[in-house]
Length: 513
Ligand SMILES: Nc1nc2c(ncn2[C@@H]2O[C@@H]3COP(=O)(O)O[C@H]4[C@@H](O)[C@H](n5cnc6c(=O)[nH]c(N)nc65)O[C@@H]4COP(=O)(O)O[C@H]3[C@H]2O)c(=O)[nH]1
Image (cartoon, rainbow, N blue to C red; front, side, top):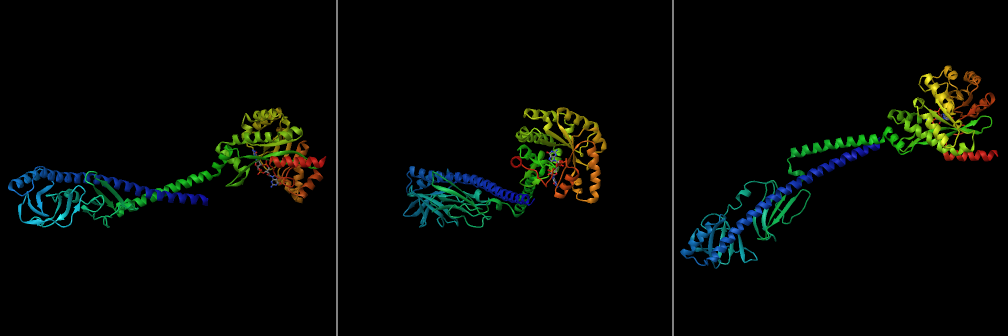
């Protein structure tokens, strides 16, 4: 079914998109965790370096080291040696470094750079100041009034020796001073000034409450682009394969949902199987004397399904019993008002081998009829020649049925396996001539054969019913030769819902009186 195919493809596509998004989102989550852990580690380290610089400066201030005497320089040396990340400690006057613990007195003094970042707490920070010492090296300098501390250049060495796949920086929270900036080789654009959340970006921020700076990380290869081209291709193939499996499963599910077996079973459970009634008339008076109960299933997908087809499905599914008990119960319940009003009116019920072999069916029927206040003789049991049970079983069934008071009818006479033995062994009340023979009444040659069959049946003193009367011509022949016969067919009525039947019966009654 086309509609199944559409939904299967749609669900496959949705599954593919969901999978790719799931991989993307999970990878981003993983990357964010990795970057966050790294930030935390880097921030802790930066705080350690900062606190060592501050403590060194504070010690110098506490020892009131303010000028470059030998004793003071010696003191500075002792203090600087206590801190791993303090390269040197010095004294400043008029913006010039006058002496340091490592290099002694500067002659001439070394000028500090003009640009610095002023921290609220009177600290001044100089980035990568050059030419302070007589070595080709630049240093980060922290200054508090007249004391300066130089940060060792390897402070963050072990962080930057390895490319982690993302860029990062240590900056003041207002992003106006940068302590460290690492640009990953895998990240093709520089670390952005503001943390933006693009589809393929993974950004983290961790800030130090104590020092007011933050660690920012950013990856421009977030999500699926984190992986190599080969892995992306593999993920794509796996997602595609999984989507195909889902599409197939959805298609199978929908196919099952829309299969006739599934829908029929559901219709039985939901009591959507209806019963219609086709009037049977006295040929000469055209009076409706009874009805044949015919089961109906109208399905939104399959339309009106032939009873022969869904009866065989019910049989195959092992739910025929539910169906036939349902039909019998509904027929009796719906027809009770008509049957009560006219004690000669009858309802014919079709049975198959199942009912013949089911020991409870006749008793169930008898109880239903009697508890509805009806006479069992108002129910005719129609046995088709298609019933394939041994003759003695059939004979036992019909004897029991008659014992309960039901009438028995031989349906579709002439088309099935029944032979003359059936007619002698089973006391049928009524023989229904199959519509193949009824329609043969239109043909002069076939007509003779039908006549001889019917004469033989009539000689057994059985009521004859002609099924499938479709034309005035057929009716004329019946009226001419078999005027006491019963007739049934589309020439008179098709099967009718109970409401339509009640209207027809009421209309006929009014026109006769
Ligand atoms: N061409 C034509 N057809 C006519 C005419 N008048 C009546 N028919 C059709 O002939 C079938 C008569 O029922 P059937 O011989 O018992 O044959 C029935 C019967 O064997 C079985 N069936 C129907 N309802 C039930 C049921 O409730 N229980 C059981 N066990 N079998 C049923 O399904 C068969 C087919 O039923 P339907 O499709 O309803 O077909 C019905 C009816 O609609 C006509 O003038 N021309």
